Image 1 (tube, helix red, strand yellow):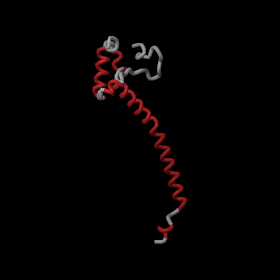
Image 2 (cartoon, helix red, strand yellow):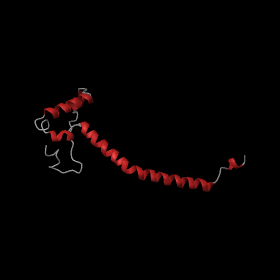
Image 3 (cartoon, rainbow, N blue to C red):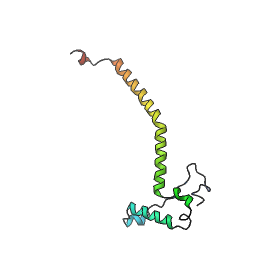
Image 4 (spheres, helix red, strand yellow):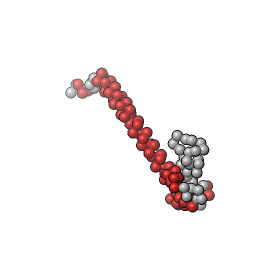
Length: 110
């Protein structure tokens, strides 16, 4: 619980507790959906994680996916304006080069 509350080893973005499928689960053809159900049951029935409501957003693969998706979207929003600017600049440079080359020779002979 202290680890997931980011008290033991403080991380900038904190921790998310997950239960991954083990080799026995893979060997027994446990589906990902069933593995996620097994994970939810583990956290619901665990003596610490199941009773600490403040951990609700810090446990489970679904929360990990939601957190990572949010970080990715933030990163994209942050980087997109610069990328658009760089692409616009490169497009201008290429257009300038094309203008310097002039029109194709076969287009002028028609």
